[in-house]
Image (cartoon, rainbow, N blue to C red):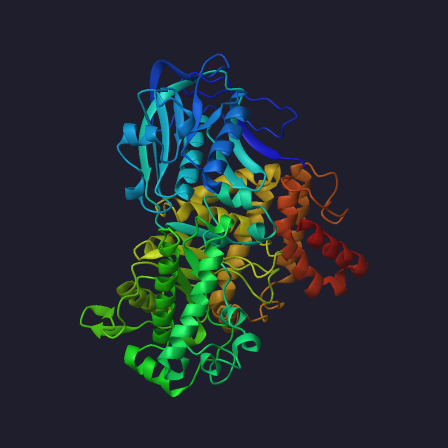
Length: 622
């Protein structure tokens, strides 16, 4: 598999990067000299690498988890790529405790001594990178935060920057690297940043990690919409009919008002949760996903109706029941000597898309009847309440922002499931670039523990600059003060090789087309509000001349990138991840798709061959 690496090649003295060459490792482009970050101060006469040798050792916290392991391995991988030097890796307990030239990864005794911290004060997903007294330290508020901090340290050292699967920038031929001092803390606006994209779905979890993203499956057990999976009526229905809703397609979270039956339901589920959490692969997990089935129905029994009135929310009975499940599961683990506090992650979705609050003069407060909710974390799937093509601050999203205010009044932590994709026409792009930076600033003001931005409804949903969207989100969810225009320029300068200029023209024109359609076509705006609609594939939106110009630009991009032919002269080979050509092909699928459906019959004699080639390419692209 070919790997594209955009590099600044150098012999480095005091962080001065100069020169460039091309070798078999990839395509190198010279972007001039590079100097040390303003965050860092060079220490003259002290070196991390001297004459292509280093005395440093990587020290991880004891019993490292997946993120700490990845942090140590990736640091060593890229350190070696830049310098040709491989460092030894030890756990804290394997050292003497007196080493000076260490690169500490995670909450080690070295970090605690040098920094006076375990990292807990940083908060989930945040990090601190420090260098003092000869040591280098990366400490996260969570192990995922430590991993993100390691990539920041690599950036300080070698200009490392990751853009997408197979495309990153790093210095090469670093013979000498001065030691430097730094103390940088980055508090993440969104603590846990979940990746639900085509890239992640077709298996590139390393790319997700290098972007500072995660899958929520890494911290949870079970999946959503599973209530009737765990308590299926075939197994439990005859003995416990009160566990099921009046329609039979949801659970009844009051057990028809029978407290003994509700206790037994909670006990049965808690046994299942505890057993799953005690499995070796789940020993570090503290969240259980348990939620309603994926339909718009709800129990209409007398007890559920009374609970909705009592709590001023349909979700009230669900939340109180889930809280009891979380508490009982925590107690079961404690009886086994396990001190984890377990929270049940349950969806607020369709009928349960509300929160038990009371209105005050200044806003909202928790409904006085609801009681403590210490063992439940709601995840709001804002599918129907939010206009996904508009900013969170837009007037069209007043109701969605109000929901955030309500949740903030009730929960110390809640999760949000947002959307930026077309469900039924996923090969067409969905423009949410305009408000991305401002959205992350706004969301950072709420008690959002995890933000999942869905960019896929299919493993193939990677067309239309989705990888750019993921790159921008990965940056802005951590630091929304970053300049989105500079980030976008940087991405196009790297992701497509010399084809970047042509791809940027398509991107800029597409953004104008989307803006025009949103403002001047009511049905297009309706599509934006309802991410399920398929009406957007229309000649009213995608003009023939524009689409043909984009096809020509795709050809130009492929030629510039080094492709032997043009877009229509061959099928992309499978497993070619990392090539500039692949990135161009992925983001160009939507153009070919529009042309094939709307205009091909009139203008392309061999339309069957064109469609077959498109079909094969989409499959090969993953």
